[in-house]
Image (cartoon, rainbow, N blue to C red; front, side, top):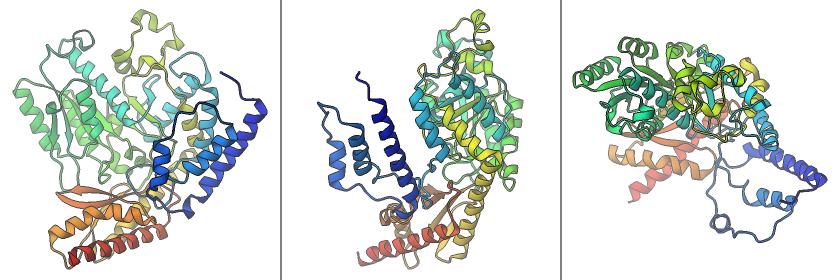
Length: 482
């Protein structure tokens, strides 16, 4: 591999810094999102494999002209879609340095390994989760963190039932049964399927009108499965669902799990950091009692993608699930903690911890808490604006920083009004001034606005609702003409 002369790299790095700074500085002045035009799409899709290389400066020019004009939109203060945050500037800068070092963070004695231990502890401290040495690992996201946590839960359940699932698999065991509401993220079902448990053994526990798990119904389901000779082993509760931001009654669920000797896993991918806001911290009571907690620094904290985190109460459960190092050798390595590759799926692991460290260190706990509290306050304000508007209605209570609502569409029958609400998200997105997504709640179409960007203003909320009204008028007029 030929080397790039040092000065050429330095000049290109300055150009890249200017390109990124200009991009970030102008985000709020551009449309939130616009479809990629056909010519640009074809240019990206049909790019031929180059026979000869190109200079760095030329490559950066191509990035600026062909890639950066077509963002997803999540850096914009009026991006309210899905759960994708704007990138924290400190994390953007740290990503460059981490890429330059380019280690494998599987283990060994180098800075990234020790830094990951520290930032995992920081994350646990931020959300109030008890943390012992080795009881956590950074992942690609909560989807992978969920696989790791549920694998540990599966191993414990099998061991208690007299099986070694790593040696013998699941074939000889009675079915292991897990429980979650219909509001649980799809990553829970994916993990159950990937771990060989079968989605038919993931029970859907009813939720109340507020979207929170019905603990009495959970208790009945566990009792019924025990009576049928099955092995209940895990409850997956939510600390902020993706549809409405609802937080399950974690203390009551933890009580039941303690009584029934079930593993309590909490999906806090997006919402766990809401515990930092004193106004809503009470909703999270019991989260600290979980056996495992999965969350995403690349969501509410704004750490550049990708970065998730798995936290466990007992480090030995996670290590015992994945380590291939004989137990008698484990205490001889890395102060007894071993390599990160003993705690998860990845062997070659990227240097994720530096961007987490930079993001948290730049804002500090107080700054992060203030950002979270601002987002939840904005969500409550958006809920108030919706309730004051005779043409709009809330589809669910505002618990964290997600607001689910719908347009009543006066003058149209309910079926047509539902069709308008179904089409509304894309119609708003295409207008370019705000970005919102859709969902279905109680069988009815709704919009959901997720507020993760502390740079969002109340004026941005007004723009969102103006765009919803304008797009609704256009869609309704089309239905009436039809």
